[in-house]
Length: 172
Image 1 (tube, helix red, strand yellow):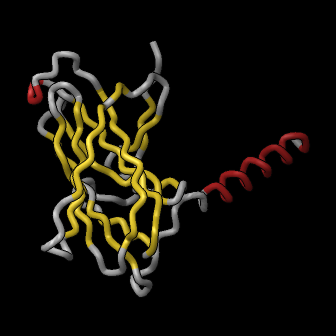
Image 2: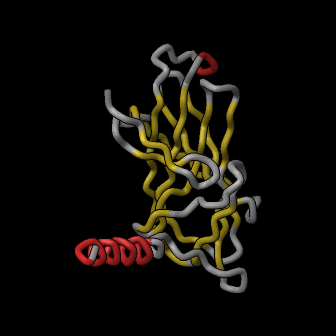
């Protein structure tokens, strides 16, 4: 029994300390920019999710998130932000491959205090993904558009789903 005590304590300490390994969002009183995520689902075989997955190299927690129009608060200043676009084509996009794919967009962005950025975009049948970043707090600013190609999510990889949960795709 005593031999199991040390590994169990070590595991508990590791789990508890790893809980702090997410990006620490600013409080409501701190100056911050807000990123509004987007999620769409039309049936079992068609969805698109535009999510902020990392800020300054730290993963973003989506625990307690509702799924669509989540607001992610970001400290003001120049930030390295990664936006992931997860999608499943299905018939709605005329993708016969049924690819469960992801396009990744690393962005260096000067997040202005009080700015509100809306994340969205499009996915085309050839897996070309266009990310659109719109500063809704500045109606004169044109949207920023960036293109990339989606790639299949590799087997045995884990990705986030609405509500902060994670799904692992096992290999065959």
